[in-house]
Image (cartoon, rainbow, N blue to C red; front, side, top):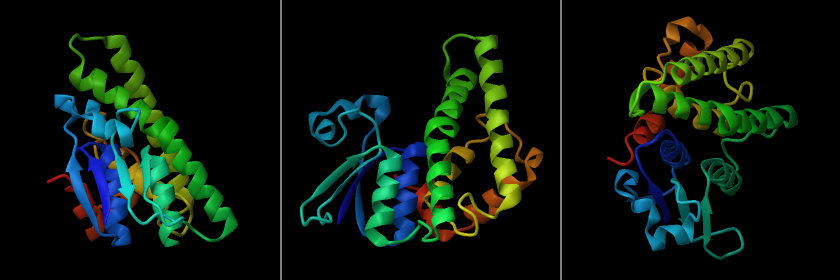
Length: 206
């Protein structure tokens, strides 16, 4: 059984959604980042960057346990392990990879900054708020443009790229984004939100 170290953040929910979609058995150890549990020695052995999520798969491909941190690496590993959630068509596969990297490099980090300055910063910083609101709007525009051309980020196939992106889009109110302004994102969002495995994964940890 795979062990998932996680907390109730968009990055954490990427891993739990993938595990649910793939129907892989897993157990959860909650890492309360608000209490500093990410600095516990046993967790740092798995995730030296002290970030969730992380997994330990006792049945790695070489017959040995595999420990992984970084949500994108976890998604790719699980897709390779099962042969699912990654298109086999070369063009669609490239799309899945590039949109996954887009999420990892932009749609996650920039929206994380929006969360911080719009909701949690100890002082009001109008410049920072405006900067990250504009960047959030830009990124949603990029996403909307892609989804105008295809039902999912890779093309016709639901993939790890969608799984990576959805939990961040699920916090659109935190980013002061109205999905009605992005009709293609709204269509995609509603379709993914309706998936039972996504609903289960978004509820982890309970």
